[in-house]
Length: 89
Image (cartoon, rainbow, N blue to C red; front, side, top):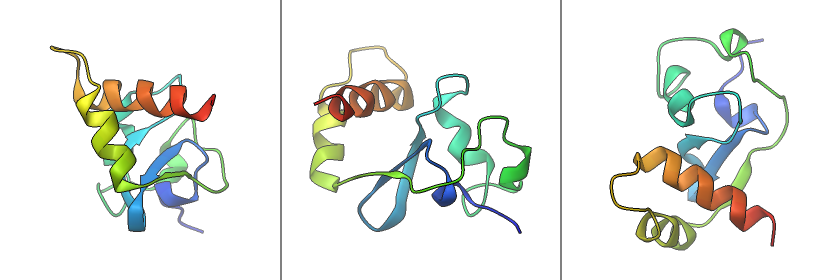
């Protein structure tokens, strides 16, 4: 079976499947772009693939995450950091 990032526990998913960030610690935050439907490769090539339901957030939460990014920080890294902090609450 060909998996997409939506089948991975490391995927940060915002309203209706808007995927912007990989939450896996050992992978780049932009890893989600490498796989369908956002990229050209299959998820089986991802070393951090963890089958399951993605972490879901609302677009309102995405706006909060984006607003909280530090100056000069890579957007995806800042969003991932915010998502992980949000998950601890």
